[in-house]
Image 1 (cartoon, rainbow, N blue to C red):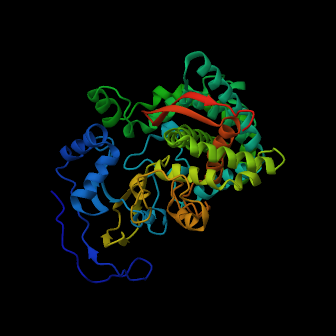
Image 2: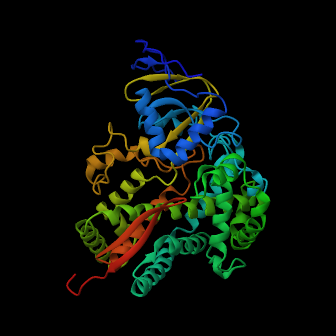
Image 3: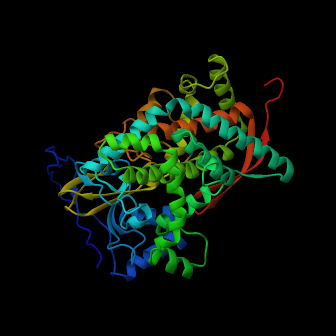
Length: 491
């Protein structure tokens, strides 16, 4: 039955932690509908009729609230319950980062959890709550790995992506276009393996099969939340209703694991001193590298290029000038110091992450009775209720960002722009905060941002401008380059 929408009660109640909410306390509006039937109907809306943005915006419009009860995919029979309290504005969304209020155990992918047979029988770090002892051990291992390899990031990235751009030039010359996504899939996989472990996956047992095996393994985990463009009846049965059998990805995962067990041997040695077994550490390194890092690069890079492809050549010219000037000031070298001086370029990356966050969904289960606040009201949430955030709505909040639905390249330039960074939350936390052992913010947050910046540095050191066609694929944005204009002699 539909949840009854009650009028606001003009009183205040203590917010968890002792403070009192000064906003009116309201009952959370919304409806879960008829069991079994409504979740399936809602799932069809989500995938096929309204789309993700339309599905959530329609609930906000219907109930005139950015905090609303609704069903989320995948629903029956994949998830035990599709019912969530959705937080869809920049203010209420923040509760999802407060691990004193929400539990993060087994909610990385939402209301369902992929079989641990896909991760060697272990619950890897992404599915652990910070209160679980293994969480700190694994995250410390990742921090140590990132710190030990930081000097390799820029040269390794530039070498790998120089080859990508050279290949794109040749393809455009031959065919008039180049599929960035396809080239990026291979290049990013090689790059991230070399950055982390100093061993190119193609030089290992994987050969050139690594990206294909990785994507297959990712699909077996994310299938309930994706649409591949197949006939609806096939997707509903084989992707959204029943999990794909993990045994069908076993050989692919075994090959990936073999690469990591060899390439990451020094890291695995260090893991033992942190109290982790080599086996558990290896499965976590595989997940962090392939799911978090490689999966992020697959989605983020086309997402950044999408907005630049839609921009005019004036923005390209400004970026090229800024990037080349900063590099020239460092003696022609691409350094962290040079990258930090590129204010417009950094703003472009942040704006792309605001508009198209690589991970759109965040979840957390209320640890106790809570009061959560939107901009206009406060709402009571009961212990055990699942909180859900759809990040694109929260990061396009008109109450925070002027022209929130538009890509504004210089939005984060200057002191005024920097104050908005706390509302850029792609990393499972505000951009102004840092990952720690006690929170769930992405361990590789700084690396991910740097990689996005280096993509633009490499692009505009090489070219004055470009054109590209933008479409969609199963995981997000598809970018096909149609021209790359090199600097003229007078540039």
